[in-house]
Amino acid sequence: MLMPPLLDTKDSKPVYLSIYRFYREHILLGLLPHDAKLPSIRALAQHLGISRNPVETAYDHLVSEGYIANKPKSGYTVAPVMPILGANETDDSSRQQLGPASPASDNRTPAIADAAANDAPLSTREPAPHDAHPDAAPSLDFAPIDFAYDAVRQEDFPLRIWTRLTTRAMREAGSALFGYGDARGELRLRRLIQSYVRQNRGVRCDPEQIIVTAGTQQAAILIAQLLEGDTRPLGVEAAMHPGLYRVFARQRLRPQPIPLDSDGISCDALERNGELCGVYLTPSHQFPYGGILPAAKRLRLLQWASSQEAWLIEDDYDSEYVYDGRPLPSLQGMDRFGRVIYMGTFSKALVPSLRLSYVVLPPFLLDRYERDFADVDPTVSRLTQLTMAAFMEDGHMERHTRRMKQCYIASRRTLLASVERHFQGKAAVTGSGSGLHLLLAYENGLPITELLEQSRRARIGLRPVSDFHAQAIGGGSPSSFDPFVLGYGGLTEAEIEEGIWRLGRAWRNDE
Image 1 (tube, helix red, strand yellow):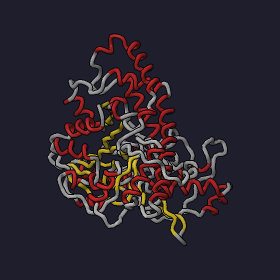
Image 2 (cartoon, helix red, strand yellow):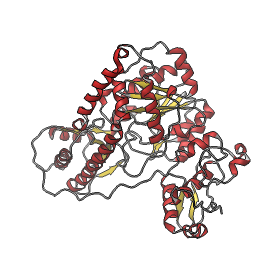
Image 3 (tube, one colour):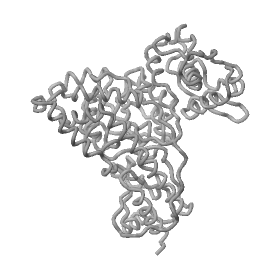
Image 4 (spheres, one colour):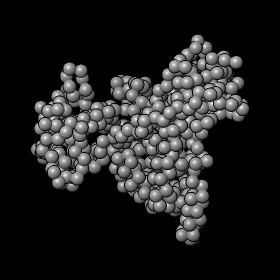
C-alpha cells in the first residue's frame, strides 16, 4: 500500500494539498492502477504524524474529482482513470518522489510538470443556504417573466466603469485606434486572456494561440473553416445549443449526435460511432443537462482524439459560475497531444452584447490559421478590446465576477426554495451545481405542449430541454415528456419567486 513520504516541515503549502498532489500524480502516471487500495485515513494520519482532518480533506477532493472511490467495507480505492502516461512511457525519474516538490524541481515530463502547476484541489464549499423567503404568495401583476437560459442581469453591469475605461482607451490609443489591428486580436488583451484562463481553468497556451472573436458562434465558424478539407463528419453532443448546431451544419461539417450519459458525453457511444473529424462538447457543464465529465472520461477522450487524429472542441461557456465546489481543470489543460480546441467567452461574466469570445488553437491548427487567415480583418472592435484589457488589468473583471457569483448563488437558492414551496415536493430539480440555469421536471399527465400553453397564459417564458436535442434542432419531433430549462441569470430574486409561484399555480390549475 503506497504511502507518501514524510512531509517537509518547511513547506508552506497546506498539508492536505501535498497529500492530494501525491496521490493524484501517481494515479495520472499509472503508478497506482485501477482498484489499488489507499491507506485508511487513520493509518495515513499516523504515518505522517498529523491529525485526520488534512487526510480526510485530501481524500474528499480526490473522490469529488473522480480519482478515487470510497467503497463500503473496502475503503478508498483508485477509480478507473486512464493514465496520462503508460507504464512503458514512464522513465525512472517519473517514479521518484512525487510529494510536495515544486514543479520546477521535479523530474517529470513537461506535460505532467505543467499539469502539476494547476493541480490544487477543486472543491471548496460555499456557505450554507440562507433561510427561505416567507410563504406569502407574491403579488401577481402579469408582467412577463422569462426564464431565459442565456440572459444575465444587465443592471449589474458596471456601466460607469466601462464608460470611463472606454474614454481612457480612446485617449491612450490615439491614432492607432483608427487602424485595423492584429487579426488575432490585440496582443495586450490576448496576454491577459492567457493569464486569465491559465489561472482559472488551467489552460496552457501562448498569446499567439489565442484568437479573439465576436461571440461564440463566430468562434465556431472559424473552427469549422479551419477543419475544412477533412471529409469526416463532426460529432456533437446529442443535446446542445441550437445556434452552434446550425453553424456546424451550415459549414457542412455534418454534425452527428453522440448520446449522453448522466455526466456528459458517452465515450462508449463516441468510440462506436466510426470516423469523425472531431467532437464538440461542454465537459465542465454539459448544456443543457448540467453533467460534469469526470477525470477518467476526460483522459479517455484525449486518448481517443489522439488515436483518431481527431479534434476535441471544448466549449467552456460558463466556467466562472460554479457553486458546489470548483470544476475540474479544462480538457485543454490535460491535453498532451495537441488535440483540443478551447472556446471561451465573456458573455456570461459580463453581457452578451459585448460580443467578446476567444479560441485557443493547438499548434497544428495555428499554423493553418497563420497560413490561410493572415489577411483576414479582426472581427471585434479594437476599442472594445482595449477597454476589456483595461477592465481586466485594473482588477474590475475579478471583482465583478466575484460579486456576480454571490448574486447568482442567492438567485439559485431562491429558485430552489421557490420550487420546493410552490410545487410542494412534486417537482424535481437537476443540474443546479453550476451555470445560470437548471432543469425542472414536473409530470402531471399533461403533454409538454399543454404545459407550455399554460405557462404562456401565465406570461412565463421557458423552454423544454427537447428544444435542445439535436433531433429536434434538425427538424425531428420533441419528446412527450422532458424537463424544462429554467434560466435565472437575467432575473431578480423577486422575479424568480413570483415566476415560480405563477408557474406552479398554472400547472396545478389552481385558480
